Image (cartoon, rainbow, N blue to C red):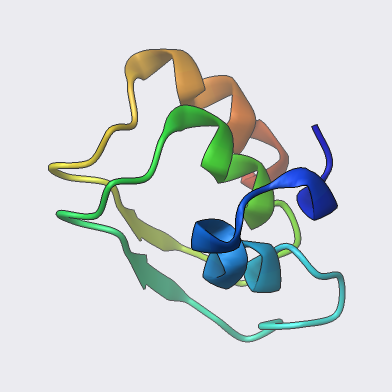
Length: 73
């Protein structure tokens, strides 16, 4: 599923997924929001992201593989 196919409730997440945007975002807090596993695909273009709070969300352990592209040496 591509970003264009997500319903309008995903508009803020789609903005995070645009290449060249939010390049200096270091912390992102989703605590208490109704996001789901696949929503994490929008975070792949955040090179400086070092803190991601997913407490009390719909994100499960299965979504960890979607975070692999964020790993930096």
